[in-house]
Image (cartoon, rainbow, N blue to C red; front, side):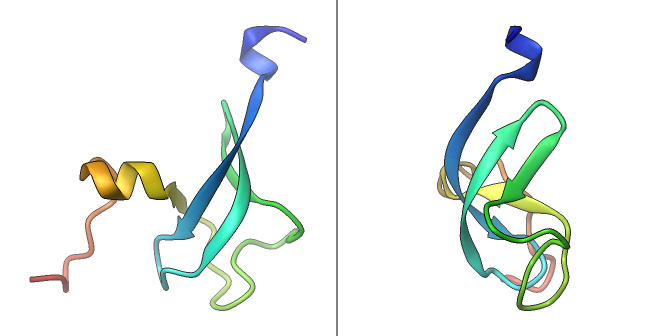
Length: 65
């Protein structure tokens, strides 16, 4: 397997609703483990790692003051 195909296990949150999942981080994005259609709570398909959120480098909620 090349470096481009590598994946790592992460803890990720749905950008839309904040639901947290065990996930795989790959070169093509973050995918929750055990769900095929994105977030089981809201259907969102964009995820960020909790590490990115805590570092302030993940997506920002425009409603968060």
